[in-house]
Length: 446
Image 1 (cartoon, rainbow, N blue to C red):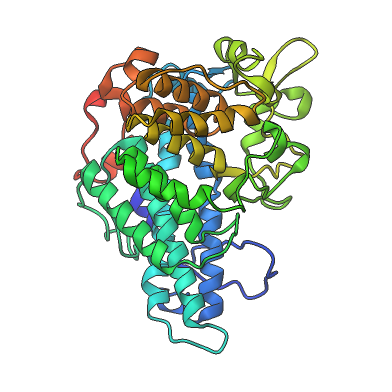
Image 2: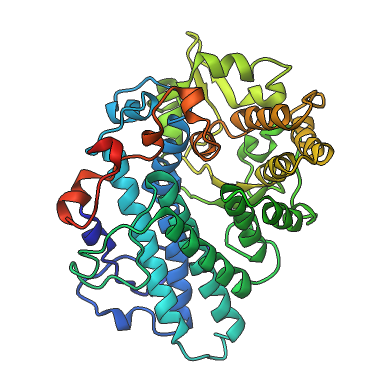
């Protein structure tokens, strides 16, 4: 579907709902937009729908995450979906269905956020819709829009920036791509707005000020602004709400949710399942095992001196076929993990290493290693410590969307994966190029 059509989203209030459930706000083209967010209750419903957009199977539910790890060096393609194999083999084509669905899902999420930002800002206050609640909902929308543009930039490089709601098929036609720097500037602006508006407190399922701090730390790492990466990591790490729980599997095993490990995760239910498990689990467990840990990764994670207790993330069938076992629940209610305290620790470790504050870098690295049941690192000096952190991230986040983006942001993908730097970004979907001649394809795919 063309991204312009996908972006047409008119939010409507769902009249009969459970207050404990995240609710979607379905597009209804027959209802005018001004009637969709018209009071505090409909604003709250719209924001819950925004989280559902973020959790969509084409976004953090499965496909976006898959791009992040299939494109690395931990996974092999074992199933029938040839389009998944294109990421493993670094031969992604513009007609790949995964990139088309991810583009559409992320821009749909952006448009949901745009509707909320425009409409909620204009709502009058009510006895049950206070300024504090208004600020919270706006902050959540700014945070999720920041995350969406951050992810778009990571996958494709510069993309078109839309900051107002899409109301017709012609609204976004003819808008060229912004530069990577311009998109990152928008991400920072949205995160700063979110930080100012969001409430204090800990909520692992909805954005708070702490969630914005965590994403700001990641943002500054990508910008190579080591001082700010450390400063925002400090804010999160110093909070006793976030702990590296032991052993490694504790944050996902035994149906765990919302553990102290988690800063921000997305929840699913029996009526709103996560398709992730089906791609990882073998047929014996009701899955299709479209992809699986490769031999190189298995040798690392099963080595007690490298993987430690993280070997729990893989299992094998009776006939010796290995599979990832982080996503395993039946029904498929596995959370999608967006920000964990382990990442913030390793962000700070990397930033300290870049500043050649070796002792501090090793302290954070060793905290993550200790949780995995490993001895302190023997790395010495900036280069060795940075490589040790890279290797730790490879194992720690093997089945989360980090490895590919880590290798790209550190300019290590060419050396590790043997690919041309022009392929550090993926092709724009062909249907988007056909729909809008203002869009220009990335160089490697022309």
